[in-house]
Image (tube, rainbow, N blue to C red):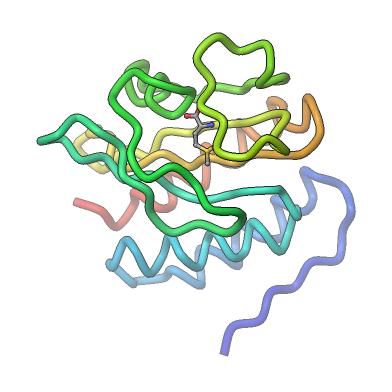
Length: 162
Ligand code: SME
C-alpha cells in the first residue's frame, strides 16, 4: 500500500519529498492514465491547488483532451495553440501565468482560478503526449520553483513512455 508522507511546509522541500514518492508510485507501471491519475491525486494533496491535472494530446484532431484531474469540472477539449494549455503545446515550453485575468488567451474553466502553470510532457522521441496544468485561487502562486520541479516530474512521467 502506498501512503503519501509530507512533513515540510516549504514549497521546494515539499517537491523534494513527493518526487521520490511519485517515482516509486509509478515505478515500472507503463499505463499512462493510471500514473497521471495518481500524480494528480498526489499534487492535489500536497499543495491544495484549485485544479491540477492533465490534458492528453490528440495529434489527429490537433486538440488536447481532458485527462485525469482533481478539482472542479473542466473544459473537455482545447485546440492546438488555444488557451494557456494549447500555447504550451504549440511552444513546447512551460508557461507560467501570474494573473489569468491579464492573459489574452486564457480559457477560464473556473472563475475562481487566478494563476496557472502549464508544463509539457514529452515522450522519449520528444513528441508532446500531454500537458500538466495547475490552477490556483491566488495570483502569482506559481514560479520558477514549480517550473523546475514540475519539469522534473514531466521527465519522470515520460521516462517509461516510448
Ligand atoms: N486555463 C486553461 C484551460 C484548462 S483549465 O484551467 C483546467 C487554458 O487556458 O488553457
